[in-house]
Amino acid sequence: MRCPYCQSEDTQVKDSRPAEDGAAIRRRRACPVCGGRFTTFERVQLRDLVVVKKTGRKVPFDRDKLMRSFDIAVRKRNVDPERIERAVTGIVRQLESSGETEIASDDIGLLVMDALKGLDDVAYVRFASVYRNFREAKDFQDVLGELKGKEDED
Image 1 (cartoon, rainbow, N blue to C red):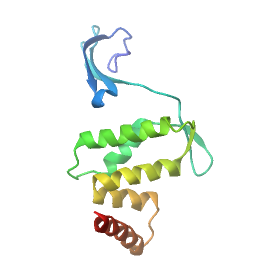
Image 2: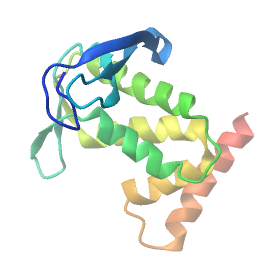
Image 3: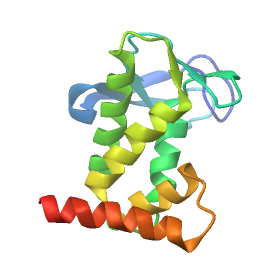
């Protein structure tokens, strides 16, 4: 693993332990050249996924981008980071086990909305406003009506 500070290719693993409920390995590393310390995560990747955008353009699936979407939606909300990590890992596993290598961005958006609905109502509305491209207040009322329907079921 290359050192992010000095780009040396000779880094040493100082500590390894399971992370994300055993779905990943967290490694603490040190660079003998510059003394820098950093953490890496190793995850199982079942297959290379490609996201098909609405325009038809294809881009490699990026787990970090999915995580950033959650982080933006839950910003300043009291949501346990472990729950977010489990939701992201669950979505990635679902996509990998679907048998498809090309996934429509809309399908990923629906999975994120479904996960956010279970995590935090405000985060759900935030994400929905971007994902569904809200243009007027009525769009917010519609989503709030969906959440009210969810509460009535519970």
